[in-house]
Length: 562
Image (cartoon, rainbow, N blue to C red; front, side, top):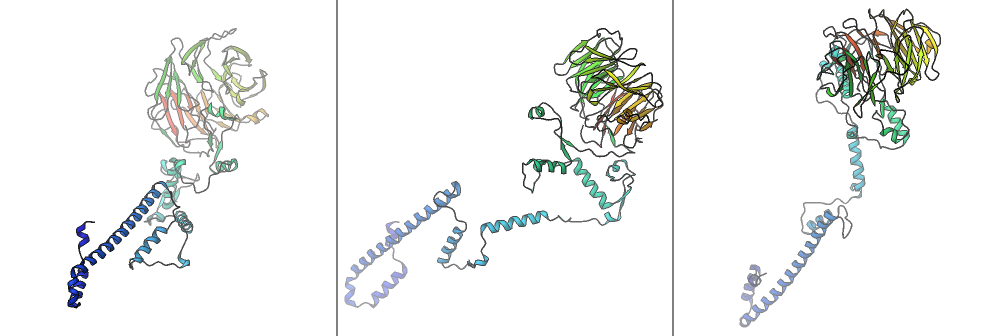
């Protein structure tokens, strides 16, 4: 503070001084200069005290502000922060200054602790979240409108019962929403879980059961899980309705590289992404199937072998290729190497074009001459045994995880073989069959289908058949020419029967009801002459190879996994 400002006398004091001067007697006016000097000294001392007090107060306030700033940045360094203390201090300061803007209500009933406020706030939020949101606007016409969901093909998926036809507009909207949520599930980790998540095995199992999920079997430790690419959680399957099959045509699986000859084999790899396609143009092609581009991955040309059949080993490590030759080929998928094997020692077969690979990938069974079945080891690629039928062998099928083999042929009988004992333990006549041409077993081994050259397909319960019951569960007479191919899908709800001697001669049978799907094949699009077929491991894709060199790809909407 400057000296000039210290010597200034306030107006009030100056007026008082003037009045005193007027009231004073004349004999005291002689000491006017001395009195003024004393007043100035007293005023300067008082001003110094006031300024010193103001400086001290300013320093205290600055220290307080610094402490507040440090506490807000680094936590309570000097003393623990007390909620509400600052507000009380500010209120006291304003009260001391005489301000009447704020009034403190200190009644005990109106004061809540911080924890009580938080509890009430969280409780209110939970109540708000649990309340169902009311729509801003509701269409009154929804209740009055009836929708025919059986008339339009794309609406049949909304049916809950087979004979359901008309539903209300509001029910139609709710089913559309549910179907959309089913096709577009949300991300699990992004969902808010109101319940506390515990890691106990009991709660995990109960939650899996509630969600319709079950752990895949066959995993004993972490190494088993890391050595496979299979799904660890398997969703429970739903029942497929008969009548109409919901499907859509996708881009041809071999659209990038069409075959120049008839397609003889198609098969999906166990990972459901790789598709094998082989034909009489001597090329083995692999495609990465996604339903949009279906990129070609690899192509193998075999100069001396038009391919009659090709198949993956069930373990996915190799593929086997055969034709009307004394030898066959194997293709190693890991090393991308082709090996030529044969002729088999001690055998004179000129064709090894028909074969089946056991589900455990340990044995290959070839159709031989004069009723012989040739058993070849997948490890050594050498002949390890033979089986002999009374008639000629036309078809083979494995059962019981590769421990049993079914065969049929020219004598119209179905043979059951025990591969451990290398002996036939059961044989019986296929009803109405003269020459058996095709065999197929369901994935669980409970059912098997037998086709003949007359176009008739009989479906048997294998346990009842072995027990002496000769009557089939169902006789399917949808085809009129020789049955060349039979195939169950992954859950045995669909059976495909195929004949290559007639156009569009491929039928899909609903196994639980043993009725054919009436909308398959489509009347608008031709299948040409179908020769082979395969379902993807999850049932979502179906590939059909025809004589025109195309691999037709379809999506089955009932199945959500490839």
